[in-house]
Image (tube, rainbow, N blue to C red; front, side, top):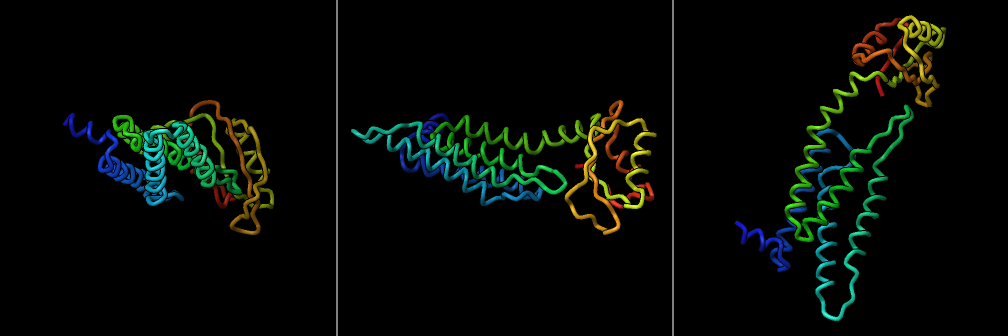
Length: 230
């Protein structure tokens, strides 16, 4: 087993090709996780990012091994990291409801590129460990993150209320619940009904509360036609 691992970490053409296959496979699995959660960058994108990073790193090592060729072994990996940064930035969107989407996908693309570089460079232990940690972060830690956010003291709400006194009634209801409004702004989002006003509200509770319960209470108000947490 140790001999096979040493072979894979070597510089022979076969070893490099196997590492490229590994990088592509790991990248596609990370992209698969993004696809099932309906995010904008999927299997092909992640597979190509990982493969490209691995190829660039393997090429860098190859150039460094050529006699009488002065190659900067840090230049290509540095270019890969900065280039992936621009690619990841393209996946980040700010919606009309002031929601920021795509941050996790952008971060996943960046760290997938780092994983590909590790695998392409023959640092298999780190590459495989990085792959495992990416999957843990994107699958397991998301449940922990949701649990923390669901019961926090703060909530941001997008809500559509009737223009005919709906905003005043909502402000009164919030005051009756003894919630503190951090901010209340008119949303640029077009409401579902022309008779409604779209509002974004940041609320600070006096203690930890279930966000789902708050959303349920708001949805039951007769002057509220749509509400969601953002």
